[in-house]
Image 1 (cartoon, rainbow, N blue to C red):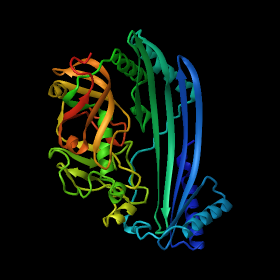
Image 2 (image 1 turned 60 degrees about the vertical axis):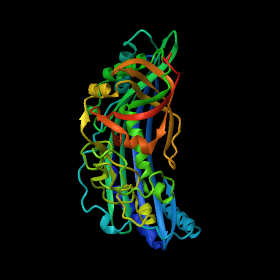
Image 3 (image 1 turned 120 degrees about the vertical axis):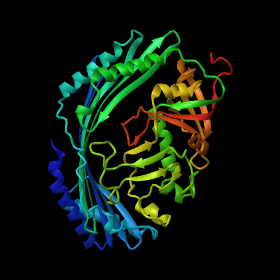
Length: 448
């Protein structure tokens, strides 16, 4: 099934819902429709474990009566259900407080044209073929080393989505997308115990995914590397965050400059516009219109056109992350980021990975973070970690049960370099990031 075939019907339903909202007295209204269809096939230890099909459709309706707001949702698109859902949103609005920041974005902020971002690449894989792909991935991983004694399985997923948004200003926009993935989780064991690790690939176009054998082999290699971990020395050392962990670190900064955190005064970066928060050689740039990328979108959840912008320019905060509502709370203009950020890149001179390891010298390479020890108000950072102890630029031994601590304000300013190993599998497209002067709590002395 090609979900794009439903777009004309859904556009008409959005128009019908907006008309019903007007008939029920709404001053303004907006409607979001989401349709998803997909397949997930899981295998474990050489056998098929689960085949799951999903198909979902839902309507979110928000009405504004003056400065009062009411929202309701439904999965039923019949005329009676739509009328009842609009009435439910109207009744909710009657009992809410007036909020001068409520309301639609200004109509001129919606896109006049929708670019073709090439996000839709259906993969007509059948369950039998998906099963074979998953089995070959798992088998390739288990074959890496005889110490790979068990598996948590491999999974193949494929998903189509269609989003339609419309509001009473007259804007109706739609975009469709696909997302395909393959993952593998393996378990290794030696005399010191068991370790688990994984790897995955994900893309809009199935042709852009890594092949199953490569995914399995990488999962196997990463799992074997973790065997017989030791404790790291205790002290102050540089830390190299691997790309997925570096993306999370950048995510904390984006959360701190998001409108919701700022107007609630729940951020360690209050009133930070123009303030230096990173080295001057580093910028954070959002590029929402990159063709075929996972984080691309032509408009946000408020129907506001997305655009390329720097959130951090030459180390200084150049823009907050704002929706229509949070922008009004801060007496600013929306940045088109209702619902999140889109293709955020770290723009800086890239250091080749081996050179980055040499620059790390003696310190910790973090490949996993655990716990929730991040205080968004103070910036205090304390996380459990696992990875590798590095001596003279070379991996010496795996480490586990390590705590790394610092303050995010200092950590961002103390970024020494970024790598050339960008991970494109998420909305924050980060490479490895090297930070100096973090506190590492492990065993004192030799790390044994």
